[in-house]
Amino acid sequence: MNQKTTILLQEQYDNLPYPQIPIEQSPEEYYDTLFIHDLTTPYYLSQQKIIDTKDKVILDAGCGSGWTSLFLAYANPGAKIIGIDLSPKSVEVAKTRLNHHGFTNSEFYTLSIEDIDKLNYRFDYINCDEVIYLLPDAEKVLKLFQSLLNEQGIIRVNFHSYYQRFNFFRLQKLFKNMGLMDSNPDDLEVELVKETFNSLNDSVAAKQLWKNKFASMAFPPQKQKQSILVNYLLQGDKGFTIPQVFEMLKSSHLSFLSMVMWRKWNIRDLFQNPDSLPDIWELGLGEVSQEEELSLYELLNPIHRLIDFWCVNDNIQSSINPVINWDKKDWETAKISLHPRLRYKKIKEDLLKAIRTKQSFLFNRYISFPAKGNIDIESDIASCLIILWEKDSVTLEELVKRWLIIQPNDLVSLQPKAMEVAYDELINVIVRLENFLYILVEKVGE
Image (tube, rainbow, N blue to C red; front, side):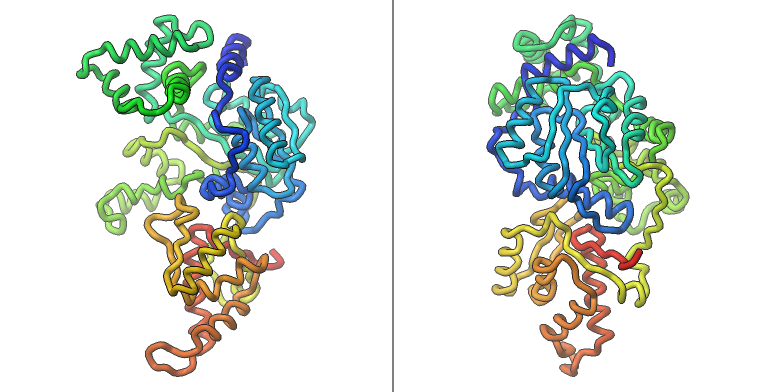
């Protein structure tokens, strides 16, 4: 990073360590965010296996005030958290935050991302959230990350979307030309931005964007200032497209794994009838690559501020066989587990309440982003699956035995339920829940 950019970014975040979250605030019930930061999630997507996070080494590159570092510590029990940031004040806040919450297996350094090789660590997981698009050479940073990644390690990184942020980039250029970004923007520059927009005619395009973003201005002044700084006066901000991102991954010897919010990038959901697209689309989507499909999505619907994804080393071989395609032998050797981010006391209590009151149990009440609509199970199935909250893993046979106790007879014929029928009923439930990663299924011995 060039020296001027380094100084400006450091000053900006020294003045306003980001994000502005109270030290004592706990992330314990932020289930969606914990689900994202749990290494279990991308590792299962990559290997269809469950990872033990004990002793894994996790880098939070650009840790800021340590809010994300705290999520990483909560979500990955036993892992070592390494946080780095340009801003000494942010690093101090991050240290204080993790110590306050009892996470002592962590280290924080005031360090540029380009210098992380000086730490002499190799990493199982690198989290680079809301940072890389500010750096002069994002591709160089990706190559550095790859060089410090363990063989089966995973990187989570995100870029600002060029298409979604285009109007902000245009206005950043305006304010740069006005001299508001020659040094580190502060209260004066923020007030000048507000004065500019408030003075414009309502018909001006820039005023419309301003009104959409700050329609009520009801939030506190400090949060208002923070939002102006990260949208209109953000030093080094740049946008990228899907093809640009994939080209950088290729040159960095990395392979795209998945969007973090994968359900929100489903191109079929953009059509009125997802199951019956126009012929040109139905035929075309069957022949396009993952990159091409994502590129089509961002051209049709550029609503996502971030191109937010996981990637892995390009030499990692993954032979995932979707559970919907498994045969009887596969299921006989399967180990069935609950996603760790559902293994909370409150969620189990809610499950028990649903069973006792004979109500359905909603998984997406806790972890919502992988789902489209409600993902629920009836109380009798919940009674069968509650064992997943009590044991690390079970076999399908164990679940079938429970299911035959709970529902021993066919509800139509009232005859004893055949073992094969019970197997099929449970497999259907597990396949459905595994599709959203609420339940994880691993082949034993592979």
